[in-house]
Amino acid sequence: MINGTVVDLSRIQFAATALYHFLFVPLTLGLSFLLAAMETVYVTTGRPIYKQMAVFWGKLFMINFALGVATGLTMEFQFGTNWSFYSSFVGDIFGAPLAIEGLMAFFMESTFVGLMVFGWQRLSKGQHLAVTWLVALASNLSALWILVANGFMQDPTGAAFDPVTMRMRLTSFQDLIFSPDAQSKFVHTSIAGYVTGAMFVAGVSAFYMLRKRHMDLAKRSFRIAVLFGVLATIGVVTLGDALGFVDAKAQPTKLAAMEALWHPEPAPMPFNLIAFPSQAQQRNLGAVRVPGVLSLLVTHSLDGTVADISTLEQEAQQKIENGIPAVQALKTLAHNPQDPAALAQFDAHQADLGYGFLVQRYAPHLSQVTPADIEAAAKDSIPPVAGVFWSFRIMVGLGLLMLAFFVLSTLYSLRNKIERKTWVLKVAVWMIPVPFLADEAGWLVAELGRQPWTVYGVLPTWMSASTHSVGYMAFSLIGFVALYSVFIVVEMYLMVRAIRIGPGEQGGSGGGQAQPRPTLAPRAVPAAPYGSKLEG
Amino acid sequence: MRSFLYFVLFLMIAVIVTVLAAILGDEGAWYFAWLIGTTMIVLVSAAGGAMMDAHEEQLAEQQRAEAGRRG
Image (tube, rainbow over all chains, first blue to last red; front, side):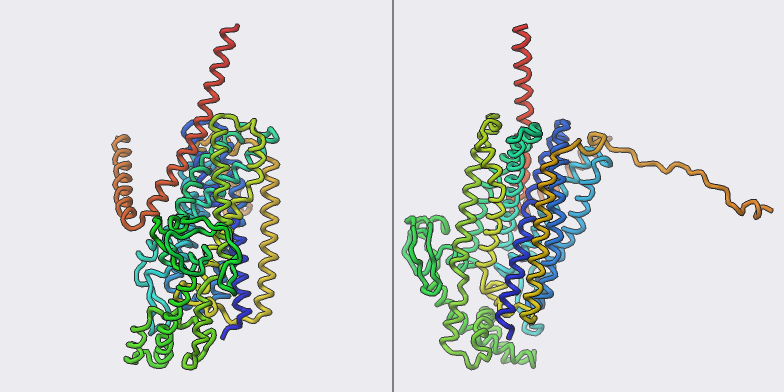
């Protein structure tokens, strides 16, 4: 059995690298479409200020993009190094979207990013605009594929376990990419990136306006950013609600943890606005509740109810009991893949195979499993409630704070009063970290809420890790954290430096006009030194 | 001839978009919503920038007209 400390260190390492990486990704997703908006205005109006804006914000986009790629690369390798059983178990499904994501990011996205940055003097206005739109599209499409892969981990559709090969195989690519979880997760995450980009541009523009620097650029950037932000925040809240609706069906344990709902309650169910969940005591140590709101939020009706933790634990016990014969059948099939009795036993119990694996943590030999083992494994099927509960509330609270900020800023910007509202501008500067915190909290809700599974209901986390030593994991974890901290410092330094310098002269020379290709002038060829000798 | 080629190009794009919309609308409603929503967000924010220019031009014109009346 894999050492529990190794599993925990593997989880911490993946969480640390993912959380670092997720500081860069949302800004790339949002800033790319903001660049597209600015350049669209430039091409349609021909005003050079919009080109200056696109060039300036494009420079900040590039700094962020480069460090985002650097931090993302190692994560893909971690699946192989630290999660080798997981990779072997679901690689046939997980590998395809991950490979497409790599192709999108490194071929399509990087190619067009190069053209966008170096193409100002080479491409016509229209061509450059098309390239900028393609950068935005490619950035978000690469996010789509990684979220399709993540959607499979949250709600494994389009796949089935093959008892002959002892791993999962893809049964429907269409079901994989169109799974409700993948869809709602992609739109929610992508648009959360738009909010991040909008807040970043609004905050930096506000900084310039407070300093009375680059006013033309700052005012226009602020206007575009707050309009972009207000629409995106409305979108992210709406799509978050949709994701919650999907999760209620696909991952009831995550939803129960998000709401710290320990015991059944009649409809309309109250919403725990603030609570202090105790997993050991299976209750909340104090809570502020709003009557009727939970039913309304999750089921969109006052009659609807949400599954509670105690009920879900009882269901998990039944699933574990049903899953044990499936795992026992696999042991027989490992020696004889065609054993008809084992195949029949597996078919009858395969729906709960993952729950059979879950109890093996407590009873490696399933013939000796006790009711206490089953009860302990059933309790494990609930994610860490306090972490999920508070991450969710931080995400939602910060989202609503940003919505209020964007609505107010849009009003002042549309009335052309924003320059005089210095307090709003100061708030805008202080709001820059807020979407990043909300993004990180959202990641925690999604991934902490999926525990104890790497693939929900199919593969427990404790089985998924590689068999490394504790020393190896601790050493590599320290290495990653140190390296990524350096990346963050480098990013902050380069960003702050670029912002302090501000927009320079507009990039390119031809106002977006296509430049003629340099022609190869005929060169004077020196006479061959031995020519005369050859000629005689 | 050039107009005709543009017409054919845009017609082809329209057909592809319609087919994609029909498939996406059926199989992946949220993906379709993302495409429409993102385009709308970008265009509305771009229009906001252009509106600021129009407003500033209008103000400058008013100021010029007032200066002309005084002068």
